[in-house]
Image (cartoon, rainbow, N blue to C red):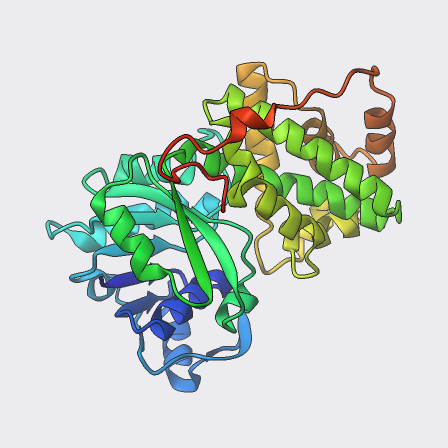
Length: 352
């Protein structure tokens, strides 16, 4: 299979390196010509992934039409708020040519205003391709260096091109599972970023391990409830795209969302942090979009609501924690594990 990765930030570059290491034909397409020129000159992404050499087999061009020519799978490695524009650029570059069989989002967020998931935008703007998502607990630097990891490749149905892509993108250091619960897989990737901001607030407030463990446990319960209310399969959130990514993002020292939350807990404001950032904190915009979606659907999500208040209403993290701790007491309810068992042929996102 031939691959094209659109977007040369840390994650796009890392996944292109992974594919090249597997010996797959892959083209990396930065948005800016000057970035493509620099990457070709030094064979290293000094801005986003310093210290990792780009393999000789990795082709780099800023000509999107050239990068898309003859490819089977396109991976869109852009922030969620840039997904619509990226899809429009891909459509324009394809012209009247043959569309790729599979277009996958590497983003984790919802579009503001519309509340659409990345795969929904792909389906809307590139309707002749199968749309899907590739997600999970993966840090770009670790994947680029060849450290072991696992991901979920989700699509509306597990067509032959999806399973072929699973095989082509899997290797000794990265194992891919498939899921037909595209809704759940994408919502898990969105929500975990919001909860990672909350976990970072706990760190910034120096609340200790007990508080973070309790927060993550209740965040998972909220993730399941919110996701199921939006049409996802509850068991999906116990897999790599839900619990797995939640653990990685809430604990990882590399996590932008956790670090962002920690700085909030230490007394910085969201506005000043966003204004001075070069890289995107997906959980920031996603908290606004998801809060709007939950309000629209009348879904109760207390942790999400408090994170939104911290980010957009100036609420102090300590006050948000106090309000969570003083909510009406209730019985802990859990989904029985029998309901989370694989249904058939390993298609559930519960991993083995």
